[in-house]
Every structure is written in C-alpha cells, then in structure tokens.
Image (cartoon, one colour):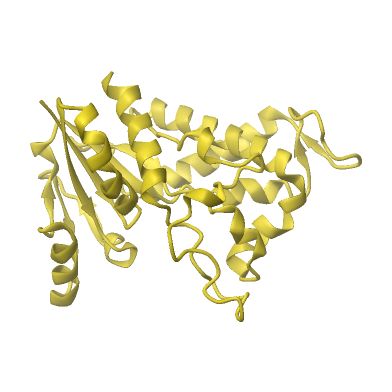
Length: 259
C-alpha cells in the first residue's frame, strides 16, 4: 500500500472532493488530505523533524484547521509520497509579456508586434522559477522534498472582471494564442528548473484549459466568478475549482507517478 499525503492551501479542497470517485480505481494507494485556508497556510512550514505545522497560530485558527481536517499538523515522514498543492507560480508574470509581444513560436503572431525568442524568454522564466522556488518554503536541504502542484490558472470569466487583479487577463483576452503558448513555455521552464533541484513541478493537465490558456468555465467552483453583477470591479473568485477539476488533476498525478 502506497501512502500519499496531499497537503497545502484551500485548493486541496477540489482534490479531496474528487477522491471518493477515484479511490476504487486505485486500491493500492491510500490518500490523506490536509488543506488549510491560505492566510493560515502562509505560516506553515515543513520543520526539520518532518512535521508540517504552523510557526504561529491562534486558538481560533487552530480550531478552524481541525474542523476542516481533523488535525492541525501532519508528520510527513509517515507517508511514502508528498504532494504540495496550491503553490503560487505567478502565471500572470508570463502573461504580462504578451501585452507587448508574442513568443516567436506561434504562427499567428500579430503583425507589428515584437517576437520574443525562446532564449530570451528562457532567461526571464528561469529567474522567475528561482523566485517561485524560493517563495515556496521548500527546504532543499531537508529530508522531505514534496512534489509541487500550482494553483489553478484563473477561469475564463476573470476577463469580465474589472478588478485590478485580473487586468492582465482582460488586456490579453484578444491574443489568447500568444497567451496560451507563453504559459506553456513558462511551465516547461519551471518543470526543468525544479527538476534540476531534485523536485517535481506537476502542471495541471492541458485539457483543463481553453485555447486562450485560461481554465475552462466548466471547472469553476459553484459560487465562483464575479461577486455580484452590480459590482463588476469586485475581486470575486476565479481561482477555486470544482471536484471535476480536482478529479482530472488527481488522476493525472496518480497515473503518471504510480502506474
């Protein structure tokens, strides 16, 4: 029996919801989930002892974590494999480049726009990958080296929001092919960079995305989207996905690494 722990922030929820439908197909894998609200998750670390626990947590926060998971910390050494879900990989940094030019690999690069070469993009994206790893809180000298799964790319609906968080998605809505291409290359560079550090970065499957690179609308969690049609500038929630999204991601991970 392989014991797998899937831990991280609130994005773990979609994976947790999906597991009951997948479990019968993986009788030799036991999965434990540990998901924490992001504001609390930011204070969690993998300790030298292998325990994933909070540096600081209030009684109310601890109760909230326990209510969700049944426990407030987890000994990662008790598991054979570890997957940290919800890492902020900052895809907006890659998308922002398409506001001024196209990757030179796409055939329909807009006339008159600069075409950025792969070596140029690679140099930029490797710096981004190093920053992502630094911010991930993974200790490369520690005994626990979890696989890393990024937070979802925002759902397509974010392009209708007037909130500043989604400006770059709205501004690039008409150049979806460039956006999709550059996101794909960005992921390739992160995967390669993490691999050279002895880590696995596990991108979400391409089938979850529209041709523009954003997550397809059908995977947005119920209640997601603009908070109110009367307040199009509200932040809303275009990041949390449903159980079907979690099922596709989890099946992809299990099939790739365990079969």
